[in-house]
Length: 258
Image (cartoon, rainbow, N blue to C red; front, side):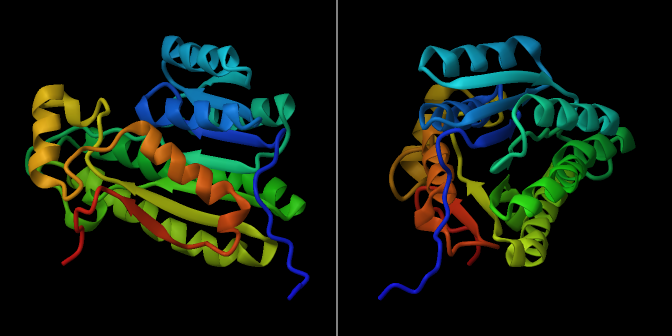
């Protein structure tokens, strides 16, 4: 039966904004959407990493532009928003991927580390969606994907700052989904499991991480950036047009909540 409902999804030429575009997940998001014909706005603090991502997207036939931005600085976020709108127009997808994770116990943690973590991990996504929001709501189509973490559900010894920010991003996802649903703008989150990216490799080797995956993950392996990019591509497709306010764990079967 034809119900008359338009099941919208990303189309060639749509704009995708990715923060943390020079890292493992961020680069995979940029490459995946670039190959699909999106115009990719690669936000990254590291100019070399950002340029490398853009070069990869272009080498595969995609369109991308690098925007240097320190997400702890509200003025730089505002400038990057203006530059992105001028270069590409309003985004169809925003992927709030960038985050930092300075480690310390609650007692030993410096206040400046706590505050910078919250600025990058939760205040920046808030500022980004607030700035782009009027443009997305006006076009009555779009998607926000927030990258959360199991730490936001389980907690994180020596990482209260990170865990708190990721719990907050889950709450922001749900609230924004409710506020923007009447405008056909969806908001979802991805909760990545242990993956072959820079963050878990700070304290271990690739070989040890692979062994951990075989031992601890039901599917017998760790995740990879392309796994998360595939889920993001599904969320942006018309197949997910009825999906909003959800946090999807992509973790190989590891249970986050008993």
